[in-house]
Length: 227
Image (cartoon, rainbow, N blue to C red; front, top):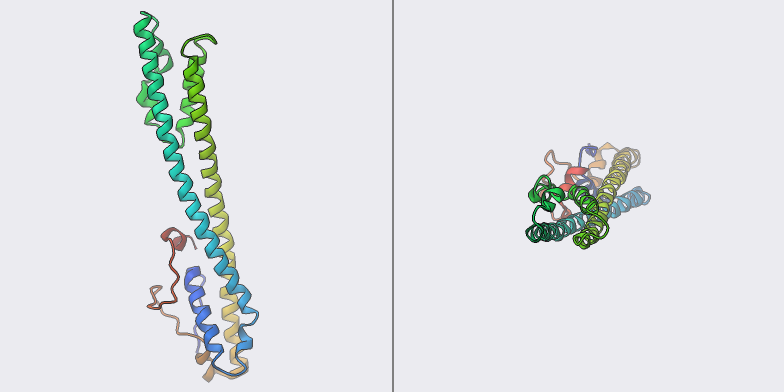
């Protein structure tokens, strides 16, 4: 008897078997009607697979941008630290560097790049505490530009993470509907053609997920594991 699909199968694997089933129904007169409404479930899963891959790629791209922005922010911190040291050399006893960087420059730079903007905000606040007319105020302004840019990118990254999660949920639900539709087709086929003929309409479902067929859809590992 034809074998059912399991919910534990990846969305890509379910699509593979569904497409093979549709091709088989075209070989037997009257059997193609089994897959007419089934096409909607299949198309929905395929579209959501594409949407998930796009969302995942976008998330990766934005993550790379956060790293790039962090390098710019680190360099601005280093320049600010050098300006503080120069000010202290020119103004003995000012001790500006220790006021602005009480835990050293590296404590800020080595903070995880997604959390570093919050530490830079503290640096900006300490510079501003030196006074509105202090010569180092311009470095607070420079840091503010860099940290704002970095924060915007970090926000977009977290939004991208949420988008991937939403796509995964949608794909999981669509896959469930496809599995349910596929398995119900087996029962419909039995009613129409009898148990002896039903195997002609459904491909053999292997135990392993690594079916050797060119119908497998290329995918990101993260996408495969997600659904």
